[in-house]
Image 1 (cartoon, rainbow, N blue to C red):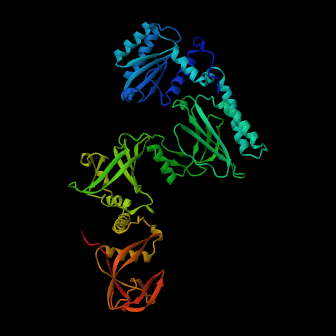
Image 2 (image 1 turned 60 degrees about the horizontal axis):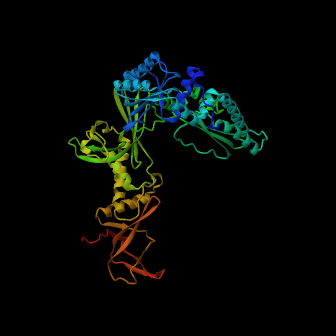
Image 3 (image 1 turned 45 degrees about the vertical axis):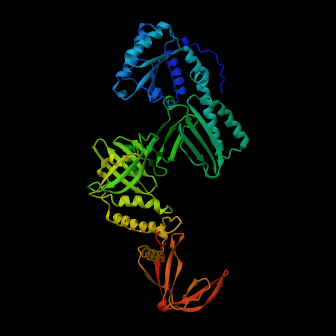
Length: 567
């Protein structure tokens, strides 16, 4: 890093454009979320907006000027015009600006400071003069900005970029260089790149599986490359030091994406352009050129493009409650939803609502040009989820058809204060409607079975369910409904039952566990078994207990659910 004790900047000797470039970057670095904005008419200077950074969440604007001497009438007129222009610009009508800073490397006289404050009062904002002392403090804090823009740091960066690019090539070739040699080469360049005022670089080398990618604040580029022959890989993450970094040193990708007209990829790309939906191109469908800092610019051949929204702003109250109602507003079902994503494109907006237990998600699209909307429902894999979590959402969906209507409200508020939503009257495809009805019936049975056991019953893998399991479920359903069930066992089978050493005479009843298979789980129901005129075949000692082996006429046993006495 550059030594923070730097020679004082001779601002008066600098070109005005250099003054504005340096000071503007100071402001952006000091306020990392701030962004450059453009007035309707060019009046000189740079406007920087920091949304929500002022008192009570208000917006703050910084106007950077190149002036390095006392302000005359011309300069004061330009300052006044800058503030007036901003306040009257219809594009910024939604701003709540309470603070407006004039930033320049010149300290005000008392008269000049009073002039600025009085003018601010006329415009209804608090005006603050950030002069030379403030700018010099920022210069001490961010010496790399001075070095890059004024002292040749840009050229040193470019040389370091070349070294890193070469090192990345070494990592993926049989160059014969040792690991320490490569590490020394890279570390030397990285010490220079630490002074990049716009970006921070994190480099990793290794072999085997590529490390997984994960998004994080400020990440603007993740570059991973691997040699298929040796398995060696290199990874670099480029993190913007502030929001303005990608404006000052943008990352450009130019090239050609080839997708087949009418294909699923073509439709997905159109959705990305129209609504900002996530998009991933077919393998090898992109070729072009990447212009990026850190020595990462290169030609791209046979590449894959992934694009998604980086906007994490979900809007106010993303926790929602959705009901399905009869025409006379009787509640049939309800779910809680989280707004998990929002994006927009050339045609309109897209919103993703996720059911809180992960049963399904809804994608709403609002076409502004056509003044219409659509809703798409996607089921998630339910296998292994607790049935008690899944059933309410499926019950809700089973009622989402005409003439029923939805009612959307903010969670934790009275549901009746919500707004009606007619888009929940889905026109289900016949096969899907039938499948949904069957799922509700099956999970309803499993939920009733759950009430009889302390084991958490989970949704089975439908592809692995055997016919014998289904027959067992049908028996359990009868028992749960309070119906006595007559069951036939195999010709070669007898019934082994623990009667605590007692040998019964004639017909008798006993409390026994009846086991059912739910996917990979074994669930027991405690039932009363009626044995009519059984034949005792013998006794067996098992783990210190005496079991009776018996058969019944016709190999029949009658079962009913054992209920605890009320009260």
